Image 1 (cartoon, rainbow, N blue to C red):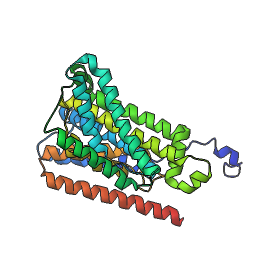
Image 2 (cartoon, helix red, strand yellow):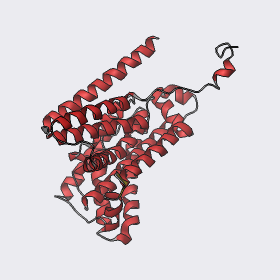
Image 3 (cartoon, rainbow, N blue to C red):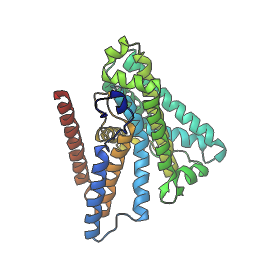
Image 4 (cartoon, one colour):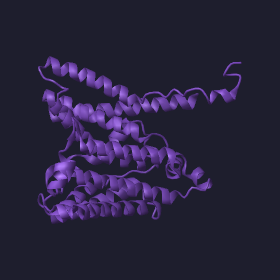
Length: 330
């Protein structure tokens, strides 16, 4: 008896899961980059470059994981860059160089970030403001506060946070990157094994069908926005540990709003929502960080670097769109 003739046997066969395309692109990028850097007389895979790459990936990845959640739900968050900047200031000013104030400072920074996420979520769900406009507006409110109250760095990060989250490593792997992996694992579990995750994907796929199925759409989207802002706040705390102080423009100068969306899209999550995941997002983050590392080794012009990033993003969107059309046609 063949497995095809007996449907019950199919469930016993191992399921072959395809490797996300972004990881194939990452491997090719690293291979080509290593060769080009080697020809140029440099070395891509030394410890210093690896540590730097993972630090860059950690900062962007913490934001991108949260961005993945709201995009999966069919929403968006353009305020994350300002939430990052605000959380660095709240954390550093509360710590003021004291290890004893570390936990209260972290708690306060995350609470403020969650408050911004709650505001975003309520604007999108209760007041029916388009997510692009709502989160952009909240971001501009935060920008006005930051610009009018801060001319430069403020506060001092506690030495314990700087030494641990900012610079401590396990071999060549920074502690911050391990934090990113832990956050990614938690988000993956939430999306694939909890009611919230299933409801979030359902809302992103078809809000009306989800509502008719008993899903409380507004609650799910508000929760996703709060989680997204918490991830941005966590990224801000990490950046404060690296800088040693609060920085009112670190989020916008790092382009964490657009970069996080780019990483999510490159990782295979549909901007329309309902399809994707955080594992692909981490692949997108590593791809962007790898491009940075390769271009830094080659001392490539910053403008050209952004052009290449734009080409990568457009190519990724085109590939996923074409794949979606093929699936729809079949």
